[in-house]
Image (cartoon, rainbow, N blue to C red; front, top):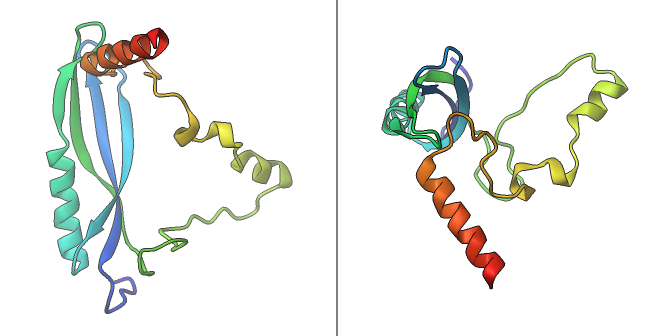
Length: 146
């Protein structure tokens, strides 16, 4: 078993969610990384399963097709060793034997980061919820009129 600090209370889990659009052979998979507060690895695992199941939903996309969001399982579950706070390490990845070119490809520009992208459906053809698209269009129209 991994090293678990006695006062540890936070875990990080990668949940695998399949976004299945009726009539399509290939589907989109999301890996959602979530925080879990739990007193033990077993409790964190149970909570991760519950969060995954609770996230299942279905709706119609922009083309009237049914979209089913289905929890497929947990890809990873790990402990957060530090107390949560500004600058605490959540997790790390090791990439040995990197070239300079490879390292440069890892580093993004500010405009590449999701928090700086406009709020727009990125993939209108399959899984974007129609009701959200309609609300975004109304909001955009109202902002342009103001």
